[in-house]
Image 1 (cartoon, rainbow, N blue to C red):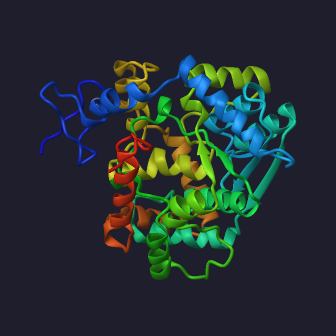
Image 2 (image 1 turned 180 degrees about the vertical axis):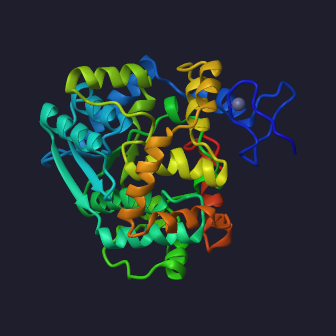
Image 3 (image 1 turned 45 degrees about the vertical axis):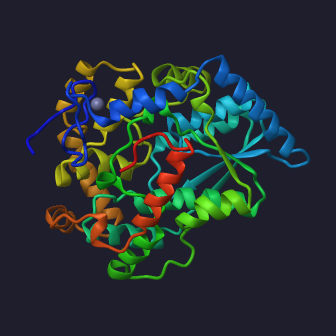
Length: 376
Ligand SMILES: [Zn+2]
């Protein structure tokens, strides 16, 4: 198949599963207009749903020090949802942060400002660095594109494990259609919740046992926590008008919150991985999905997105500096890291995985309308 780019957004054949219609529009666009947009109420109707939900959350939290928990990274989505929870919904959230060893200075300072100004409580879980490093190195050696899995898994597993064992019934997240309606295809990033894959890659390439590393497999996430422990996930940003630029401006005006160059760049590892490693080694540019989401939700023009994507996400001087920083932090020499960069690329299919189970679960969630974004 030759190269093709969607005529409406900027997704292209770097997603090998992409399908175009007669107009040259891709299936992400079709899915957005047919499935997401008609069911996305970010007007009075959505707000009414959200206020009703807030009543339930407050009622469930009576007599407890906090009525819900919010995982915060210092990024715009989780910061904004915190502001909404406290001021708009009158909730009493506990903020939960996972320090996986790669926080940027901006991320730390953003969280501190949020906590101080809104007078909230923060719990920080620090992941054992030696275990984190060992698992990350294992993923580098496995030559898979989803190097962000160890970090993402730790963040989600720590949050949900903590929520369940401390009796939290409601987890609020910054997940939203506004900036994430086009999801990166699985061949770019895979499922961070697939513990079978994590264990297999670690068994083959890891060197030290994972004793305290936060873990939760897909069944624990989707079935045990939801149906046995009764943990509900609420996504407030889907019920209000949420737009990235004005949200960042409001956070900056109110808290002195600092912007960073692009989505997810609050972690130094993620910045290096998404802006450099993934496009250079695999030809996958996650900005393509992020920008396409912003195009579909009218926060960016297609022309502006094409202009931005034509430029690398990184400048040469920063690459050199970060390359050295990442290598040193992982106990590699720059030459060893370069060798890993040049190794033969593999995919999640080359290792044990729970894909069939996940696909089944995704079908169920799509049938019930709980999951409307395309996941493939
Ligand atoms: Zn499209």
